[in-house]
Length: 271
Image 1 (cartoon, helix red, strand yellow):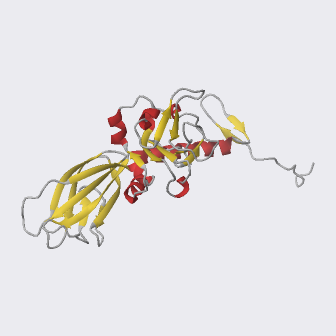
Image 2 (cartoon, one colour):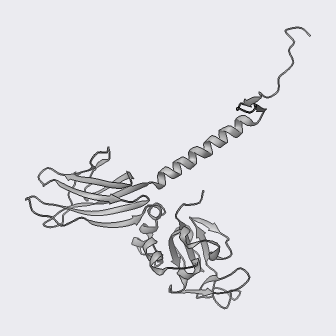
Image 3 (cartoon, rainbow, N blue to C red):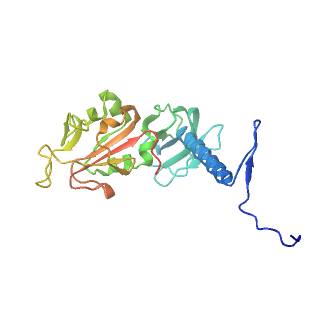
């Protein structure tokens, strides 16, 4: 065979070398890229779960009018923001731990407060500034779940869609041993114990003549995705971050004549 008539080569072969012996194959390159992508995605999710947020409103202490263009920052970090016309602000990607919050506005006394931030939460503050140097009341902080805020849980609760909302504090206060224990005392909901698939959660209404006499089976949504899980007790209570219950209808895509139940987990499933 002449030098110009070389045989055609197949797919390039990639070798992975180790202390033991090299491994070669045509598919190793794609597998390595996928493995690296999976590791990076897991690292990014882990970093997000360690973050928190601080939000709130800056107002005048005398009449509680909003103060715009106030400088809100965390000492020792690059996190800083100016308040909007309504006095509101938000700091994202806040590291968990103890921080010093500084609020400044021309014509007002600078305010400095210590604040503790927990990973995976949203700290909501009401900050009062005074023109004259007077002793101010401590910050009023409300802790919210960062997972539930991103899911729209608090927005739907504030808009009054007529549902029942269980946040992490309310779930812990019930001390449930099983997931269905969360629904036993909720209005318009019935828990049917036993059965082939375990305890069932039903809405106290019949939409059609084909419905179960005990009630109607609501749509179940798990982290915003419609689920066909047979029994809620297949999920551990300590995995749940929040619950929304709509005994009749619901907002947006969660609307169903038989009602909808939304369960949000502490580590949302991949979408």
